[in-house]
View 1 (cartoon, helix red, strand yellow):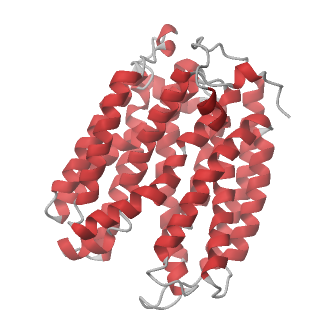
View 2 (tube, rainbow, N blue to C red):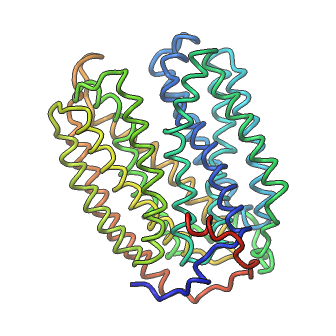
View 3 (spheres, one colour):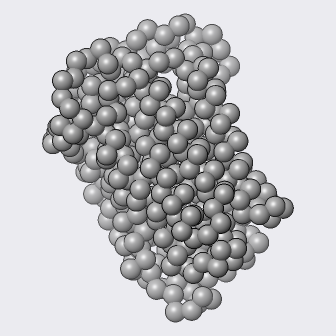
Length: 430
């Protein structure tokens, strides 16, 4: 059990609520840009006459460029006002997404995805650094839970709306939608968010590359990086094959697939705030361990399922989302407590980069394991993917306990005073 926190200390101020909403909306737009590529695959391949291998390169271009971009910018991340840094990379992300909509051939699309990844891949790390600067660790579980709701919201709202627009107009329409929405969010950040400069008060004489190297060398930080990589390896190994497994092995029709996305997304929106509250109330490492064991059980059963009714598959999908999100929120809250304030931007950028790169590696490993003889035949060896995923989950429990040990040993940090809470209803919701 964590130390008791008074009700007044656990409440968010009206300004904090505004920041949480802005960061969540930012995450929603970035996640949607990445998630929408998969359902648009068929349209893109027909429109540009792409082969499956070429479409795979289009998808991979974003993740790879995002990963390397985060590493290259990590050394500079603690030298600027975090608000300005967020605005700079967010406007680059908007321009990259606009280039995707304007692309007319394969080469232009790959280039546009690289540009989008270079800027979009850093935004998650900057957002986490802002959240870590503004919120003490006893509030951070709820904050991260709310920010991560962008994943569920993209499935519930973003993907269905994007597919509808693509069917009415063409595949470019979803990208124009993201550009318009992100431009609005960028404007709100400009108007509402205050400068985030507390970290600049601590003198840092190191140059950018030395700062990056020093952050990478820190033993405690490396434990956090390792834990984050394990989280991505376990999650992304199964994700790319979810739809193919449902259709080819569980006999879900193509028309029923959107309902699976919808139900899983709705469950995420419900689960995240609950897990965030539990994460702030109970020991985060213990919560992560319980969620990991739950996920292992669900994964091992799900990857060996025979064809069952749609409602049964939905139950397994929701159960899996419970496991995924109940691991993500407490682990990210703990990992965010590792870096010192003057290293926070670099740490979060590296962490975000490793998350992207590990996700790409996991998808590649899954591709080497899974076999499909023809386009309509069932996936083979998917149960092996489940076993490997479960193994990563078990190692992750050990890694998160190590992170928890380092975080608990750190001296308490002083956070800037915020204005008094003024919105009881929103406070209670969050």
